[in-house]
Length: 128
Image (tube, rainbow, N blue to C red; front, side, top):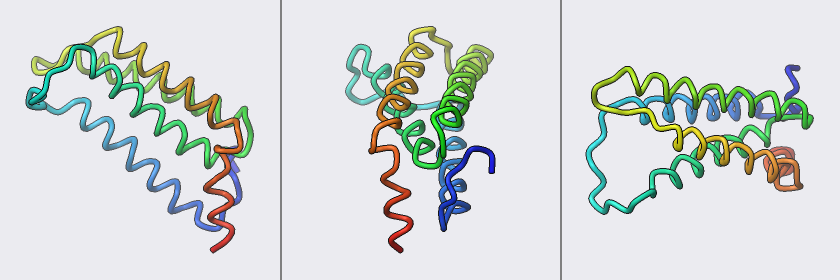
């Protein structure tokens, strides 16, 4: 089944993951007000944390390391596409360091996702 775990509520978990991806794309592409507390480089942490969380979510759904790696590659490609799309707008700008932060977040998500942490949702979902 596309490398996904056989979870009782898989459709719900997939829907929530897709919603997270959609929200990520929207937040990355719409005009945003300036941060009220500008801290140099803090947006890189936001990029890394965002992609880490998305990757960890999908690690919960992936049945095999190969399935997780395939999704991770997709997340990196999506992050690159978002940066490209930002370069085409006048209100956002592309930054190769944002993409690097995205990749770091995805990579860390894969590493953590391959530990027992990557199966927390499966354990919780089966208890219900």
